[in-house]
Length: 402
Image (cartoon, rainbow, N blue to C red; front, side, top):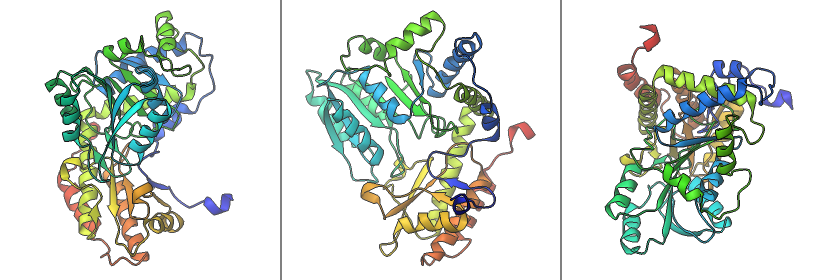
């Protein structure tokens, strides 16, 4: 088995999560277990909680670092703020918004689903109509995925807040920022987001295992009356230990906490605004390559283009799953499969996390070779040239090396 999966050199990991882990993070996690009740771990946790607020761009939010995945963070956001039977307006635009809706329904909420064709963003005109009609304020929350990883669609969260404010509607705004936070601009306070969440394996560039949730004062107030059953994800338990100064209601992953410390340090050293600009460059370069190959983006409008993942539509005579399989088997290149409605129709190039321009160009070169191998008439070098021409004109000097 080991001989079967081994490939020389580095694996080229270009799925939209989990992503490449930078060497400093790996080194930071390479350590023995510690007693989390010793003074060292609470001291580390206190600083982490303050610094985590910076990636959400909040001064008023309360963060929770939970040993879980994004799915657990979803459940934490829902069960701490809502009661069974509460009405949620939730947008279905791809596989991950679909899965969150499934969770909402299984937890007993009354889910008012607003569905768009895959490749389109959230239909805010439908939301506006529902808010206009809801004079009794039966809608308790609006749940939206900021960046739908299955289709490469980014939603406009500021527009959601603008609608709620226009109708003076008190509904909570719950946001899945799993594949956006730390890669795309995210402004929790400015956009009036009540609960935001992300996972460690995406733009934080860490292993899977931390679900990070941030709650506004309004969300914390809602948690006092929310009647959903929660135990492991109960914010009340965390807040109790925050007051005690020990921070953990159960055993944390010591290694992941040290990894998080280093991951945040790397982001802050680069500067979050520079991180966002880098992801914009990588996303733009990828889209230029796709255009040069004569292929189409699954995302239907430029306003929804994602700078963390691009879903590439293939011709009907090609099964996109074969592209993904061939890339891994021949070139040690991992690309994202098409999921659910777009299975077999798209493959996905992830360009998020601790990633630079030359790494992306290596991926794009590999994709070209795979396309040629599966019978698509691509001109080798066409997409790489388009991306390289753009990147050579837009990539700045590395600040620490000037």
